[in-house]
Image 1 (cartoon, rainbow, N blue to C red):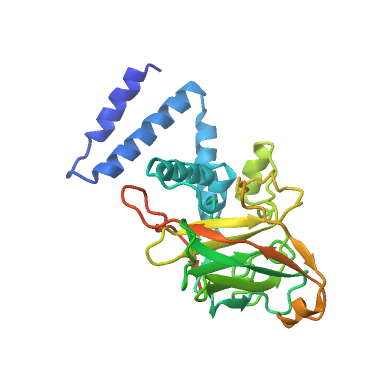
Image 2 (image 1 turned 60 degrees about the vertical axis):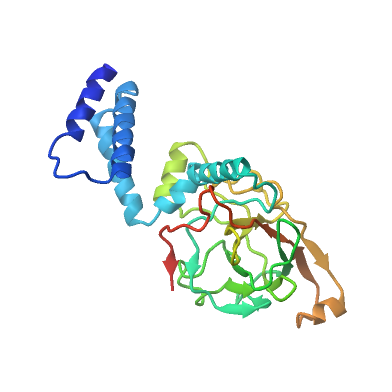
Length: 304
């Protein structure tokens, strides 16, 4: 079909049934999406059965709550991170801890602890890990009172709240940094997450000839007054999917060493009696700045 014919149809759609000015931004986005879809249907010769199958797939994914998982799975969430990186670089904000995807499994309302928290409920199997570090600004100053929200999967790759077999807020906490900007927590070493077998994301990835596995990782939000919100995660070294993450979350600078500590005095600091794993990781956040997109934005998130 000639693109002039498509443009004429778009014009007709835009001028039919008009009752007011509407929202200019929404009109621009929707019109562009419809035009691009029409061109795609024509150029790829998408048949009516294929179109309706695709629409039904999206409806099902919405009912299953998997659109937030499909977005990182097809690279869109990583793309949004790259656009934010580019916008910050143009504004002179360089360096700092790399951002990476949030994913769909955050839950608001986790218990708050000062300086140190234990994330696991004591009934979750796994190797004990202590993670600690400092939140600093780009000029190296520690940030006292920063909020470090942390969440991760259990030994089966499942997240509390979504996995009803786990206790409330298991492996989820909010830690407030001390006067020197320090945070620390005790938990269990997570394993990698996989998208729900047979779900919308899994079926889409199979159709694309791709797997739905992520490396073991730990998520973070880091916020402080006057600073840009940092959304990031660290990945566990030597995971088989470390650089083959279906959600494209692995980035250079986010794979800290995992050290085995076999020292009784060090263990006693955390009320432990045997060896444990330790991860040291500092967060560097940027000061708020004009003329760059906000990093703290509304999106659908669970709350408990």
